[in-house]
Image 1 (tube, rainbow, N blue to C red):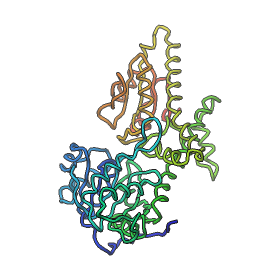
Image 2: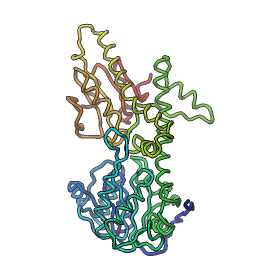
Image 3: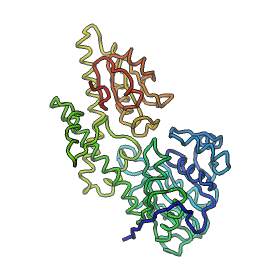
Image 4: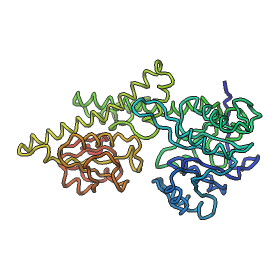
Length: 435
């Protein structure tokens, strides 16, 4: 259906018309680092965001998210005049859309409303020769849908779906594939999948990303590019589900799952992942549902993996309730209202501030509903608790260790690995307190 080729930037500047101004739509965990990366190459970048607070923060040379090295790059780019933010769309040569693509409520179907809003925002300022790249992780067909929205808003321009290589506007999909905490390094070093609606669209996108990408730019069509990102995260979700299911089985059979996995991984062709309290983040916990929604009668393994991982927080809550019961058996003079629970970690992975789709939040939220006693949260990467956690309070690791009766390890932040093992009973979802 489409062509697949490879492009490697050897370090020399790619020839062709320069992208004199780039507009990045959405200045979150992916959009802001991407904007900063282009600006660090002395390319003028306008960041577009609906949040005035975000715009003001960036224009001061500061950042509103936690990502190593990002603050220095943003500050330097703003100071040098290569990066500025706004809430009002402006003309540019290339538009990169990096907005959220969440799920709709409880039905686990993709919500493309943010992409639709971004398309409506930039449509009035599009000009012949512009390139529009959808970076947001999307269900198969989303890039074509976005192209349709743009065409409907600008009937005076031509688009690839009707005019092919001769279109006024070029459109491509280029999903991000970076690890939070290492975004600034991986934006440069990782390969990029580029799916243009035509060969010319792909070539324009390759030329754009080659300003900073040192990995391969691998060219395909839009649908394959969309599916590739979903496949990567679904692969990880399925493998995490295997580890999480093992942990539940091992608990029933009185086997140390961490020892078991270490032994199994001594096989030269086995690499079982580590279990946890569930799966979080905007990608792994969400993207498999995009595949399921597109082929619900075919995606049986992917659906089961999602169900296993979504069920893990409920299992953890049961373990905590059993630990509370264990404490009460040792202290019959107490009631549940006298028991203090400390939960360590809220983010969806270690050493970041990102709470999106975090299973730890679901666990703490449920404990806040059902536990009659105090609930202490230790999360060194945030300054305030998110809403929906009842009477839970944010505390320090030392205070929690001294005050709590039941200790629950949810996220293995580096600070927790270096701390003392608290008194039992313990619920350790990450193997930090193994003795």
